[in-house]
Image 1 (cartoon, helix red, strand yellow):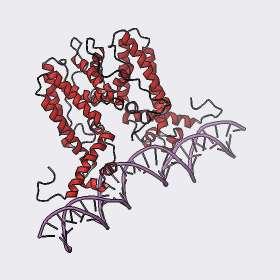
Image 2 (cartoon, helix red, strand yellow):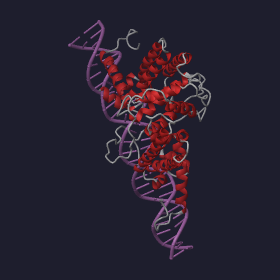
Image 3 (spheres, chains in turn yellow, green, blue, orange):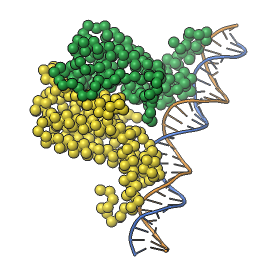
Image 4 (tube, helix red, strand yellow):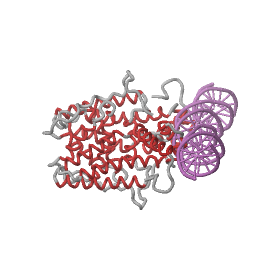
Amino acid sequence: MTGRTAAVQARSDSVRNRRLLLQAANEAFAECGVDVSMHMVAQRAGVAKGTVFRHFPTKDDLLAEIMMQLLDRLLETADRLLRADDAGRALKDFMGHGIGLLAADRAFCDVIGRPSLQHTNVREAIDRLCDTVEDLTARAREQRAVRGDITGTDIVLLLGGIHQTAQPLLDREPRAWERFLEIAFDGLRARDRPALPHPPPAQLRMADPSGVSAPTRT
Amino acid sequence: MTGRTAAVQARSDSVRNRRLLLQAANEAFAECGVDVSMHMVAQRAGVAKGTVFRHFPTKDDLLAEIMMQLLDRLLETADRLLRADDAGRALKDFMGHGIGLLAADRAFCDVIGRPSLQHTNVREAIDRLCDTVEDLTARAREQRAVRGDITGTDIVLLLGGIHQTAQPLLDREPRAWERFLEIAFDGLRARDRPALPHPPPAQLRMADPSGVSAPTRT
DNA sequence: GCACAACATGACCCCTCGGTCATCTTCTCG
DNA sequence: CGAGAAGATGACCGAGGGGTCATGTTGTGC
């Protein structure tokens, strides 16, 4: 997408460095979260700091590229699960997949958690993902696998929440989130219970052009 | 506890400034989390930066003092609820109280979320809180208000998780966490369900003298 | 009201971070 | 192989953070 379309041929060392950088950034972001320094990324890739900025003009650009890969894969999984027979199972599988990604990548948590720092295409990818989760949830609702007042937004929010719940246990038991996914899903499934407090949350929109929910905080 | 016990009398302006500082720091930490700068705190209190460091030698000292107030109040609530008749109701009330505090104080979330930066007395207070929650949970378990394989650690972890779930909705609906507390509690209550995956998590200990789980990351 | 200790102040130090750029190196093409 | 452009490098910049300290100010006991 970036190198060989036009007449200009990318130099071999440039291509190699770009690959090394993406790999190093992937690991560094996953381990340390978005606050990892560009110097650290450069060091991991075995190049100088300036080289990082030659390939990715800002830290946000680098982060966006990496997050897009993650989101694309997750979106692909969601699309595939949309065609499963057992919609309840599919929804739970999707949640497991998403939480697994969160558990393996601190930067992904940071990006999902606070929309403060973001590229437009990442925001749009997240919106697309929310749409698909809405569909997944609708199917589960129709098949009575979850209660009638659960929305896709509930599910999206629960992803971050369930991961956060299990996070202190991550060192000792990397898959501890399965326990809490089970508890949460039992709650989602509860029939014969009074209506939930508060109306179902409105759909989260990160990439609205009206600029209403622009980043406000530090 | 800090000023008037010994022979030395604290000067009036010093006492006033200390009060102003604690109040300002409370607000600043609550709004911006632990990453708020000491300069910001000083500004809010209407004093110079040096004054902050005269009263609190390090940022950690200031943060610890504020967190201790919060934890003491929460611990008091937990102790009171331990004497309620309906143990299930008491446990849920406690969770509501805790999540409400998390929703109102970003620094509290930060401190609970990652134990990286901490004073010993804060760690001990958290441990005491965990003990009390363990008791609260045991009573609820005995009264069959929650399933038999739920521990106090589950509950403590769920506090942060439920808050995190609702956090993106905080601006529009400050009490949105009630919806997710309801869902989670329905899950905790689920009878006739297969056993949860993974054994109940071991109790979290923040103040262990063996220094095993010392802060490792950045 | 005086003297002095305690206190308040903000310029300053050192550090880290994202980002820049003059300079040097290396790949590529003829 | 040689020229030249694309790429790599790391010293450097400004912002902002926690923390310090010489200096100026003020409350207090005599």
